[in-house]
Length: 431
Image 1 (cartoon, helix red, strand yellow):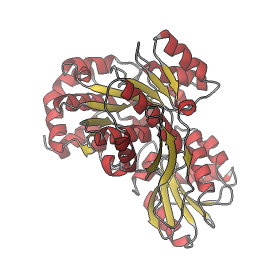
Image 2: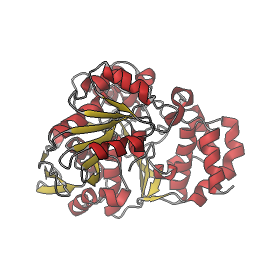
Image 3: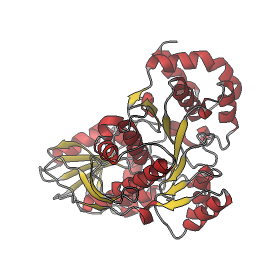
Image 4: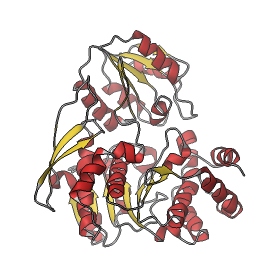
């Protein structure tokens, strides 16, 4: 099989959640366990860091990976979904898995895997574990796909477990309350393995404390441990997020600069720094110099895209993958501190999200350009426009994301702000 044939097989023959939704979701670990057994349990052949959470787990995963790379570790990175190329999901030191490796893996294991009938995500995680073991990575940063307890990635035993935060997302699978969702995410906490919680929340802290006590796992809340201060966002110059960090390990203060300029990245940065402290305590040698360099070079080292990412400066055009109520809140806070005359919002969503709550939060004085990403889960642009109108959001529906962005670019004045978002898959079509 060549790579084109392999891609066709993966995308067309395997149930794929990010395209079709619930029909592709497998709510247990039996398939993943069976796949790993066929492969000789590669997931046990390298150190790992396991990351779950409603928002921020992608940014945190990439920040950690960049710091580990700068520290001289051969670092695997498994994330989802991808934006442009399926191979973005599986990287070593920022380089995507080769087309040859993907094709040879699929060809070699297709018949054996047919017996298991895995989903796309289960197959992909098996591929990642096999690849990281084959390439003898020193450590891999593994991001969950959804939830934690029943996520395919939850067959690993990491050096440290990380849960960034808890919000209402994927409620049809994980539960309709923060406590229920926290219980699912807490399923990644392993016996004797330290866990870092990114954000303290009165409703969920008791859940995490309960699970950590049950597993005899040291628990640390990053926002109580790491205090950061930041600079303001500059419209007219390429900007960096500036944060002052006092290290409890070295007892010194440091200035950190990050190309991830969204103010919400301070939370992810604190989670990252707290996790690094736990890794250092576990014996991995990571210097402050490498932490500073890793954070500064996160985009260059890992290829991270779609997090308050500027794609044009005339007019200022920014993309962000915030796609649930909490994510939208973070985006709106960032819009508020970004100087602009008028907001033009290129907006598309998927049909299984809490769209009404998202729309209820959006500003009524913006001009909207409704669109649908080119996936079956995308909500029809005209249907989205009608629904948005009930929340007094005005705009037109367009046939594609690019048509919507083109219309916004034509309409916007030089001192306006264009935001492209509402869904990871909308952002994927413009970055």
